[in-house]
Length: 69
Length: 162
Image 1 (cartoon, each protein chain N blue to C red):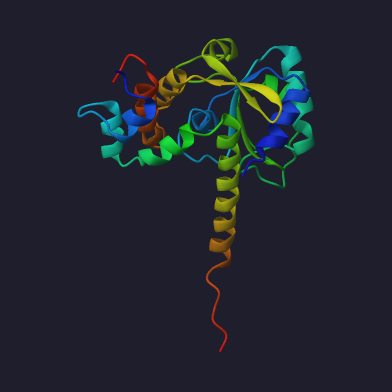
Image 2 (image 1 turned 135 degrees about the horizontal axis):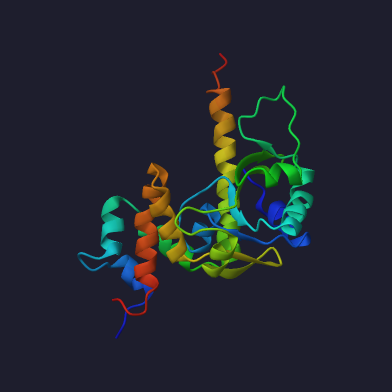
């Protein structure tokens, strides 16, 4: 019986492209999470991630908050 | 950061012929990769360039890193005089590609695309195969970072592999 995409990604066969991606450092559990979403949900999550990155950029520009004694 | 809803809705309202080709297409195919812009391949016929200008003018596009002291006019003439553009706009970065390395022009991009429903509209985005071909052809360090996951997804979604 053929395995599902999720099963293939979570338990890659040795020598496969999936195993190569895992060994490259790709977190395939995140890929599986993405597969479970609708395309609109994937894009909504991407937009939320972009907002978070923009917020990180702003925090980096401002620098760390100094403690007030 | 690009406001995807505003960009895609405006492109749809103005009936622009385009295919999403970059990081947003990669996300649509379930990659965890995070992009910050919207890249699309557009048809370069006169009517579509007119529609594209109508769709994006409200967002004041300017070439990225453009000297703010210099004027820039975003109009049909500007788009006809070039092919690929990297713009910053009031809703984020948008790259317009008349041609995509490894794939070709809009007609080629369309032939290598699939439909998705986003924000109540139908968009076309590169197939997984087209993304892999274009990333190999682009051959930049950032392209090589996404290729392993794209190839893994292709293998996972192929019903003929185990």
